[in-house]
Length: 56
Image (tube, rainbow, N blue to C red; front, side):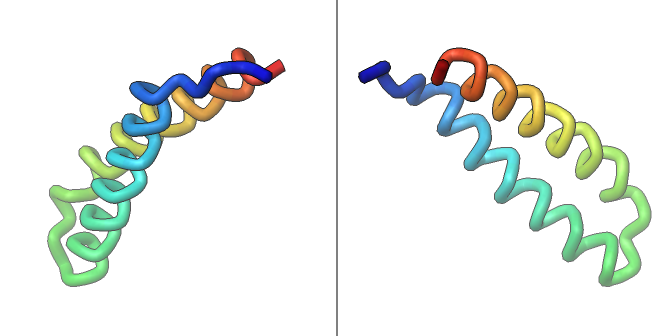
């Protein structure tokens, strides 16, 4: 059994929450929220890949 990388897991959860907030802001007409939303989404996907790599 491998240990959980809590920092990466927290990063993924935080990025998911921020991406959701940015998505809601974009849907409400705040176009500026698209850029930070894309950045946190990319960071979240990178951390998911890190977690998958260390899980095997």
